[in-house]
Image (cartoon, rainbow, N blue to C red; front, side, top):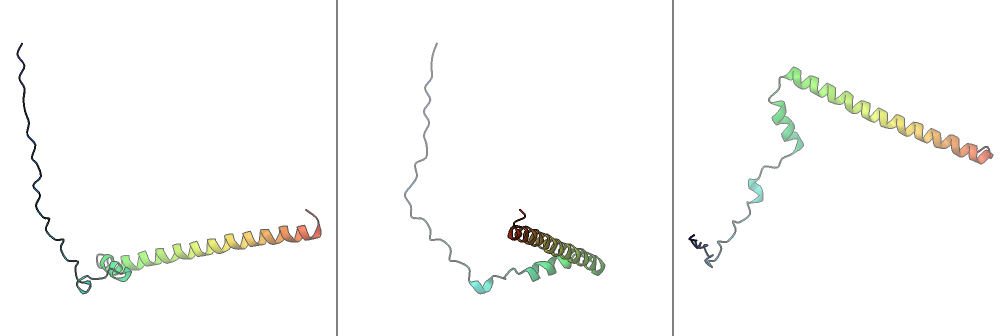
Length: 92
């Protein structure tokens, strides 16, 4: 039985100075990404009727959300009012 020995060599890092990092880009060269810009990008890919339909759906969903929040707040406040007045009368 013969055994063979294998040697492996690994590359050793050479100590060379790293290049300086690139300078940051000038602030004036960047285009600010605003919600209006994003909306115009997406709106440009839709027809006016599609855009009107999407806006209408978003409006009614937002209105429903606000109304449901108001209703929940109103019922919670009403429930607290009944409990506190009953406690004042000594019923509870």
